Image (cartoon, rainbow, N blue to C red; front, side, top):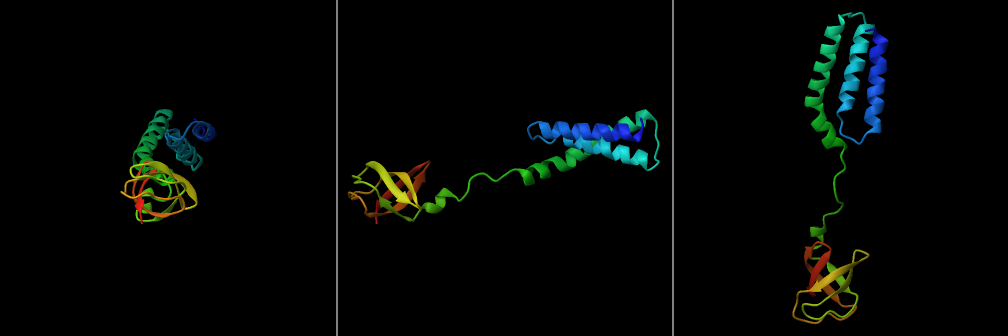
Length: 143
């Protein structure tokens, strides 16, 4: 095969990688095709079977070595601030909360579902301390 066939194959494979959801499989074959094309352009002419074998070997080795670190680097970290960091913070009860009652509380500028785990009634507007976070529910008690 001539060098420009490999370059076209590499560009087509790169376009396929961009058009499909990120798995980073086809990209390594695209890079391998471009490498083979550049080697042929540089004058390292080989029989077609050696070119195809080299293409496959380079792609598989690159896939094995570089895919996992690339995915780890490119995937976004999940979540933002850790909700467990809210434990110990002060929330404001939005409505009266009886013992073992559910209602709303304001914390960090947002309204949260709150569960009064204390023995005292929390009056609307009173300060309460976050004891635990269970999903989207704050366990609170009188400060």
